[in-house]
Each structure stands twice: as structure tokens, then as C-alpha cells.
Length: 168
Ligand SMILES: [Zn+2]
Image 1 (cartoon, helix red, strand yellow):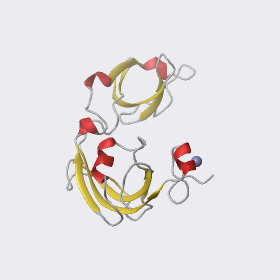
Image 2 (spheres, rainbow, N blue to C red; image 1 turned 60 degrees about the vertical axis):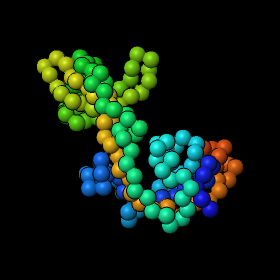
Image 3 (tube, rainbow, N blue to C red; image 1 turned 60 degrees about the horizontal axis):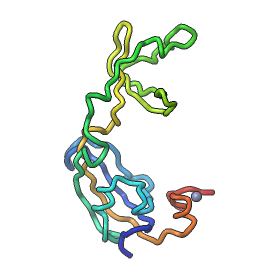
């Protein structure tokens, strides 16, 4: 069976930054494979494109440019906010505003978003709302573990059931 729309695909993969020799981001090696329904928007589109037509046992190795993955790094997504919005009972909780901390925030419309503390000033904090992988070219390598048809309830729910998926 080959990978196409609405197949349940299991892959073992390793993700490095830029090239196969780049910094390791994550790997399924020694863990459960990644299992997903192909062609329903669960994955980065270019990731799926590179797997099209493959079957169990096939190996892959390909790069995806940042703009086709998590987007380019956007300088406008760094926003300076007044420190006092982080206060709780008039005080900023100890250790909250440390560079690199990722904090949940809400915009004016009430949408949840995550920002990383980029710099802390006297009165203000620079928060970086870029995706942590923004501006990073991706390099995936690995192999296809299995390919099967998705059953109708999986397609209705939009996720995989059973091994590597939801149990309910
Ligand atoms: Zn379900």
C-alpha cells in the first residue's frame, strides 16, 4: 500500500536544523513512531508531499525551507509590553520574567498565544511571538514504518485511533 490521501501513516524520523548534520531537534528513534492521517492538514504540507507514493520500508531524506515550515522569523513579532501586566497582586511572580521563559498571554480579542521573554528592561519586557522554529530550515530523515487505510471514525474525528493514536 502506498501513501496517499486518507491513509494512516506511521514514520520514524529524525529532524535536524538545516542539514542532516545540523543540530538535532527531535527524533522518534527508540520511541513510538509518529502516526498521522495523510492529506487532512495534520502535518506541514511539504512534509507530506515528500512522502507521497512511498510504502512501508521506504527511506526518506529531504529539507524544507523555513518559509514552507514554521515561517520566516518576523521582527515585527517582537513586542514590547509593560512589565506591570505580568503583576499578580501588585508583584511580578519570582522567576517569571527570565529570558527564554515561554508565557501564555491573551490578545485584545481573547485569543491565547505564547510568547518567549526576549529581554527584560526596567519598565518593559520584550516578548517574542515567533514560533520557536520560525526562520529554521528543517531536514527530515527516516523511514516509513506502515501504511494502512483510515477507518471512517478516524476520518470523522480527524485523528488516528489505536496504536500511536487516541484511545477512546
Ligand atoms: Zn477519535
